[in-house]
Length: 285
Image 1 (cartoon, rainbow, N blue to C red):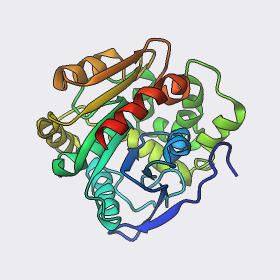
Image 2 (cartoon, rainbow, N blue to C red):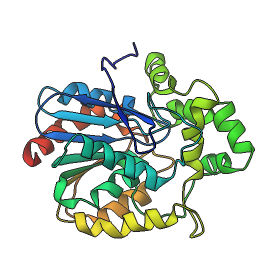
Image 3 (cartoon, rainbow, N blue to C red):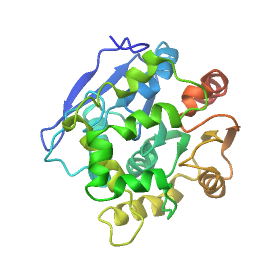
């Protein structure tokens, strides 16, 4: 059993017959939480434990991540991740929910939400983006270099191992770090970690550029939705330029900025986040 993860994941078959693992804990108003790379549902473990007595908390593992299947044949493109989330929520008959997102979960989650704004009761943003940017840190860009990137990410596991140090400002406990990296224990199981990096669409010629542009254009459909933002100010990837972009697009959002927290803001500032988050959920679910 992994530390702080006493859950029993469920399984769902996607349209391609790949097995998608997800948590579905508790009963009540629905909260859907979407992770990014190189995390998985483990990122939200403390929120699930906190909220499952009052809410139904659904946390998918994207194909290639966490306890989901890690096929070599899957595209690992943005649109396919969006489609998988939509298919899972249709399967679970989710017609209303509050949606929380981190990292790649912003583009994926908003990709679904912009298609079905009538299903969205509120939005929770944790250090993420759902719009185009040409900014990419050198330490991530080097992982996109052909051959070298695969060696670093799939061979040496440098992305997942690096995240447990670079995505937090406080030292992560060894058992928690183990929880984050456990699903990515060999070359084959790190395929999504690498493919997420190469799927970052910086140019119009990129296969996922059009998908991200569509998500970005659809954000206006959600401007009347309640939103709360929890932002770590020491994020080397999603820095304050992304935070300001969210504020410009959703000026009505309730904002909590933690200058000493990193990319994994839920690790560095969970004690400060849980109170305002519970109030937001109570008001909007």
